[in-house]
Image (cartoon, rainbow, N blue to C red; front, side, top):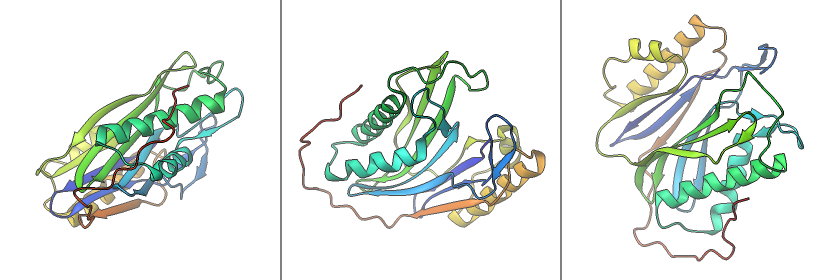
Length: 239
């Protein structure tokens, strides 16, 4: 289980926060209380925060466990030599890159023979930050059908406006609704509320806990309005 919340304040930036507990998927025993679940990544066109929820490491029949977070960092690194016309295109490239690496690791679309404990939608990634200087967000969702991988979905894709947001990505949603009656007025208040929510998740369930991780992305990212275009030499292929 993972608890992740995020906030956006138009005048000051973003935060993303998570608990640090990781459990063994089969035994449910504590593997780590300092597991990294949220990250900051950079690209010539953007600065982003992201977090993974669900089965962040999944078994495959051929190559063993596939780590989504490590693959995400690899995909973004491969994208550094290119520029993208839109946020939609940028997220679409991340989706294709992750999908291609997972299919390559599994040597096909068959991930595993059976795993009744793995939800149909088994992994989700929340992306938020600044693309070409504009605040953006997206969620990429991976799902399977009886062990066969589906092409990932992209939801909540778009640019953010001038309204402050404090959102729940995963964790104890009834608790979140109980604690969050109004949107925090500042980034500092959002940090405090995120900390209290994650701490209360740990009080109510041993599936949450460990070291709380909070990353901030201030509204200080400058991006040129007319970036130099670099053509893609080898488009990413879907497997």
